[in-house]
Image (cartoon, rainbow, N blue to C red; front, side, top):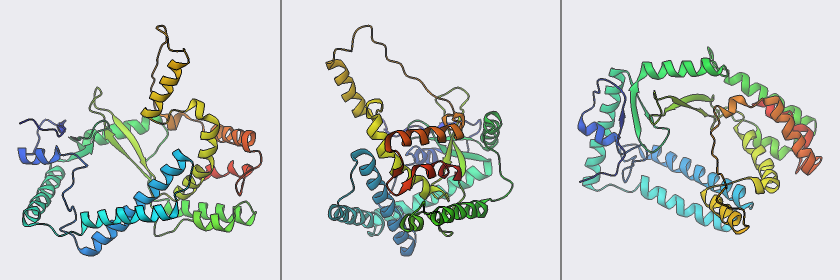
Length: 325
């Protein structure tokens, strides 16, 4: 029998895991039981349902707005949300059969055993940058490469204290100033004001690249609960449609859009035997872009296409907003 699960990448000399452990890890990060929270209290499962429901609904609205340039119809959105909630409840609340209950308990113990072995052997298990598999590596090697990345790029530093309250204060003061100067309406002000109990400090972590020589790390910044996340999403909702409108001839959204563009390109008689297609990769895009210059370009772009205002926001105010980040 040939399995379809990806192989676990083992990058250590002595692996403490047995066949059963590796078989479970090879199922990948997206593997889920019929009810992954069957062994947890009902209150915890209700919290998970509401969290995932809110997350799915927000992503659906953003995708519809960004790619279809339209708001989600209230009635259809309510119906969709109810269907999603029903599926989540079936997934989290539905009682397990005896067989599934025994499997859930066995896998729960197995995962705890895998974690204990990783801690004892000082290993780190991470999702691979490409594909849907896991990588097992030494903690010391991971930390060494992470430190080298920060040193080489000279764009990040390890913090010796938690600056969350300082960031929260700065953003709150900036939003108050915008509101007092009539550059931000009350509705948007209330929406953008960070909630102390919901914000978290952003952090960096790394995923392995086992498909490349010496297994380098790919940096990822987690800003989901950052103090400035509502501002970032708000600016994206305002500016993204304008950018898409005036740059649609130079933007490829996804693979389907690429194929359609190629078909149109060929139909226009431009595709010839001498045509060259090039691909390129940009290293460290976020650290190589000068922030001040990027803000200036954004201001020039908005002044050129929308003149003075984007909905209720003055274009001149946009130049100060990105500095909050």
